[in-house]
Length: 171
Image (cartoon, rainbow, N blue to C red; front, top):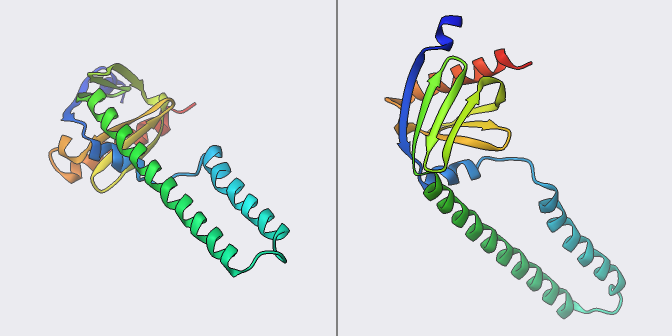
């Protein structure tokens, strides 16, 4: 393996698109603290209000509350979806044409956003999907679409090799 460290193993070139960034956004992840608060606080407020007004309110009030809750949820989801799409489009424009060089001990990444040498020790998790490889590292993610590879098998081999090398080099 030592001889592979100073040798260029492969070069991948592609243009990142908003659809690629959205594929990463659609990965299921744990909710952040703010997302949990944004869901729990309104539900707690509605529960407390319902407890205080239980005897006083009639069916019309509960219908109004249910309608407002549905309106709140729908508008929140619409805003969230709009922000995710806007952020994905901006990220794709910022990255633009990307070249990834695979070396034995690191990935050299060049894009319109800049240059990054990502050592194997810095790689946290590698997710190989059906159409993308996601290389997660502290501070970001490298998104590599299937079109950067000769075929889906090459994509899977690349993802597994990067994952294996990052595990072997982890302290």
